[in-house]
Image 1 (tube, rainbow, N blue to C red):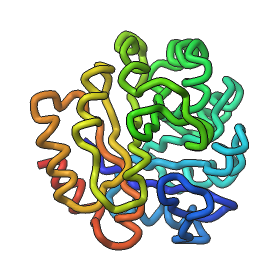
Image 2 (tube, one colour):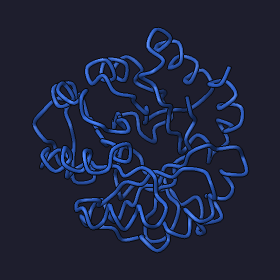
Image 3 (spheres, rainbow, N blue to C red):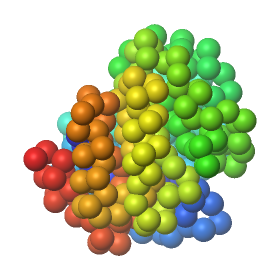
Length: 245
């Protein structure tokens, strides 16, 4: 299980949003490449990057910057989401060294596209599933898709996805802890490894998550953390050590 630092990109800066609201952002660094190297040096074994501008524009807006961040990570795998809505974009990111491509809006709006990409690039495609009150949200969390997260994943177990990033929007950036129960329910419904996201605040959150998946550890790839590590509430090395124990 991995503790995965998140870097959210907005206008070339490293920011964190509250509940996905672009008008409620905090800038933590004007040098995302240096920030990526910092988390690498802190012992991160995977990095999560979101192109927030791309998520709202429907196409990548920070591609060159992400390429430099991937280079800075060296051998550490990087997963990227935000505006990935065509095979050409997937191929460009793979060529740049990105290992995990997160399909969110496009996967929800066109499930056939997700199925085709998962089969074409087995082990590289990650479903990004964001939920507010249990309902799937798209377009940078701006719209509701009219389907529950559990219903959407019910027939995905045979698809060669790398996993699912599941974000509880109500918890994201709020420093209120994970929605462990919903995360476990989703993993069981999907039958695929899940990366928990939204609300990881302290070591106790990771301990609760680990305990919840104790009977099904193969269904937990790890947890993404953002604001907590930037504000000093959670130490990356300590969090990873807990998950490794």
